[in-house]
Image (cartoon, rainbow, N blue to C red; front, side, top):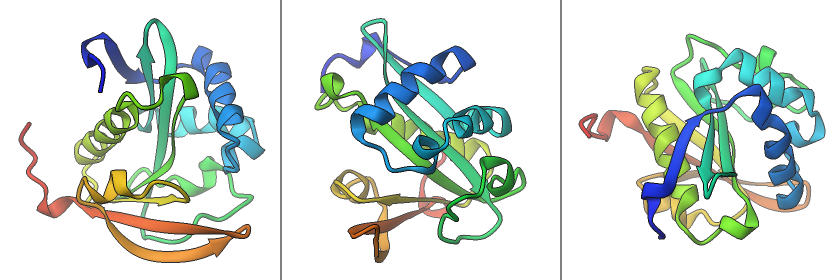
Length: 171
């Protein structure tokens, strides 16, 4: 990991959305947000604390966004964040986490993940959940457990979960 003292993680702003779309396109994201550009604006509107940006070398290098659910379920294609995010939810679902290719290999995905887990704590969530088609080891090394594997769009998708009740809330 490079010197993370030069890294800033902050809440996303509307002017960040074009850079986030570029990172999505570069990653070939098949997410709901990539399919519906207005979804990013909606995510920012409904859960601003759950949409973060990582800035490195004065450039947006990565992002993560999330939503809260009342109960765990599979993401429902076609539904907007306005319909899926539940402000009173205690399940913190990471909907996307990506780093621009030229910044990969510096540990920035971990920085973003740790910030989102911290946000889940602050939001009073009891569990963090995410789906990933690649590199589950990053999450498994941080205490996540694989709870489901399914095939979606011809590829394998792992559902990972982290029970926050067992994690110390002290820095």
